[in-house]
Amino acid sequence: MKAHDAMYIGGQWRPAAAADTIAVVNPADERIIAEVPAGTAPDVDAAVGAAREALPGWAATPPAARAAFLGALHDAMARRGEEIARTVVAELGAPARFARQVQTRAPIAALAAYAELAAAHPFEERIANSTVLHEPVGVVAAITPWNYPVSMIVGKVAPALAAGCTLVLKPAEDTPLSAQLFGECAQAAGLPPGVVNVVTGHGRVAGEALARHEGVDHVSFTGSTSVGRHIGALAGGAVKSVSLELGGKSANVILPGADLGRAVAAGVGHVMANSGQTCYAWTRMLVHAAHYEEAVELARRELGAYRVGDPAADGTRVGPVVSARQRDRVRGYIARGVEEGARLVAGGTEPPRPTGYFVAPTLFADVTTDMTIAQEEIFGPVLSVLRYEDEEDAVRIANDTVYGLHGGVWASTEKEAVAFARRMDTGRVDINGGAFNTLAPFGGWKQSGVGREMGTYGLRAYLQTKSLQL
Ligand code: NAD
Image (cartoon, rainbow, N blue to C red; front, side, top):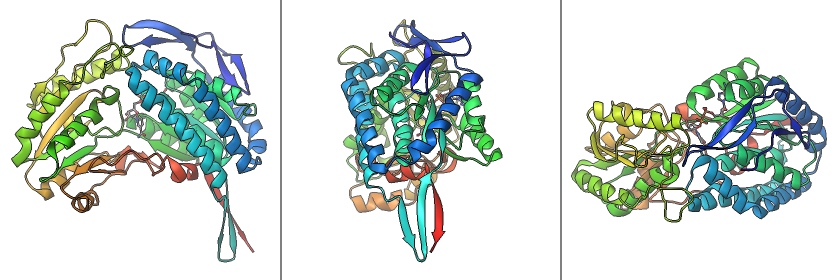
């Protein structure tokens, strides 16, 4: 696959300071498809320098003109949509249809939404005798994970640009090719040099140098809670603002009276999509004791429709997980579930294909909240079904993890589901299958994170206020 042996810094593709590279592996066949430079501190330094130099000009660009640039970026990406989707299939292993729709079209559409928001957002407000200006926070470090590579990039870059910030993007080492394509699109869109910079590299080297850099004003991180905790501490120590979008262990609560078939099918789909590598996946399905066995059976049957295979082939619904490390981690959790006494209904640790980092779609029943698989984020195609006795019990179980990113509630009426959702300690809840909304705030409670992304709330993360008393 085509890759740059350079970093996108100051509007140009420049050779990296050191010669080391990162091999990009296709998780479906374990073959190396490209090499990208492993950036080091001097590359980060150059990129932050370019972003700082570009900041005054970009911050002073009127919002409508910034919106026009975002529109041009949207068009540049839309023109290369198929190539972006194919790249995500190759580097992540997402099934082609999913890669086209969710991994590509959705973030491109989000860019268009941010272009509109940039043009319409009130960057000034009046409070009594004060005019409050909403000004860009400055140079942003955007550090992203591999699971939704393009969405994660757009989810940070678009609001940062709309706000008038410049930035350095450090994408995940497993999926740098789509990030390089993004850099090419930024170049094609005519964004002024230094407004967007892309440095590929290892988290502990390039990511760390970026998060620590004194020329960075705000760190926006999406990834694991363990790394997020470290980045939060670094930012706190330097008195920098930080946004953290971290892990999840979301509950899908099916109340008695809900349409069980629909709720179970949606719940299975939520976890199997992207091979379970979704931070907000409903990995815990909570079902009332009276309907429990019926739900487990429905889930088992539904799982049968999730065909595992080559992600590039039509009809594949579950591709590999991203890496050998991730595969081993997920299989380890499956083994732990069995050891701790959960009932393995489908799947297991046996690889469903001889080559590639595949994990069988797995269903566990009789899972209790004290089990590791009910508490820790597995990040693979593994669904746990938990039993509850009454509503109080369901609330207790739903809230009984360190996470609070998302959730689902199914009931016979919207009113009943909303009443339950109000008792959940989480940042988002879908009511009876309510559709994903990219304009509503997205972010976690508890150890799922700090701050919000998407829509106006996402934009605010990149703004700071200045009050003028008149
Ligand atoms: P990760 O934390 O290992 O890596 C995320 C990014 O941080 C990568 O770019 C990595 O290179 C970088 N990084 C690693 N160590 C670093 C360090 N010391 N300093 C600076 N940067 C460093 O996470 P991952 O495995 O890539 O992604 C999976 C995790 O992301 C899951 O836990 C998932 O739940 C979470 N996630 C959360 C959201 C959300 O919105 N809440 C969205 C997607 C993924």
